[in-house]
Each structure stands twice: as C-alpha cells, then as structure tokens.
Length: 115
Image 1 (spheres, rainbow, N blue to C red):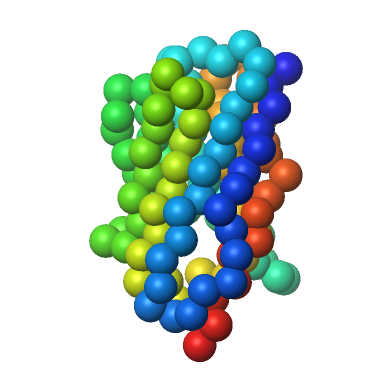
Image 2: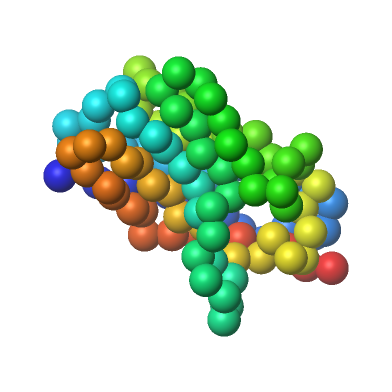
C-alpha cells in the first residue's frame, strides 16, 4: 500500500508561481513513473507531466515551458514547479505513483489562478 499526500496548492494571481509537492509512504519502488494530473470542473482528468526513474520527462502541451516536474528518490517525492500560471490552470492537482505493483493517487490539492 502506497499513501500519497500532496501539498503546495493555493490561490495565486495570473503570472504567479506555485510549487506542488507529493510525499509517498509505504513500500516504494524506484523503478516507477511519477506524475501530476489535474481535473478542472466539468472536465476529465488529464496528465500534466510525468517523470520516470531514469529522468525521462513528458509534459502536456499546455505545461511545456512553464512547468517543471522533478523527483527525489531518497525522499520518495515528486514535485511540480509551476510558473507563469494562467486562469486555465485552475484545477485540482493529483499526484500519481505507478509501477508494476501499485497505481496510487493522492487526495488532490486545489490550485486557483485569478485573472
């Protein structure tokens, strides 16, 4: 069982920055993929960014150039640095740890960007 807890969400003005963090507890395999998803009201959950244990990253087009995902295997964390935030980035953000043994989600953290 892997338990994930997100932090760092909040209210920010357009153009501002936020840093989301996700800490995992339990039996964590370093050979996993860690990711951030988001879900806006009335929309489906979508991938924002992901990072493999080898450091390969993947970003949604909307996140490229503005967001940076990183992971710390020693601390079992994954982070999302979000810069130049836009009102369209408003959503609940969820972290996800996935391996052949688990597919775990956090409870979500709200990000609200005001115009």
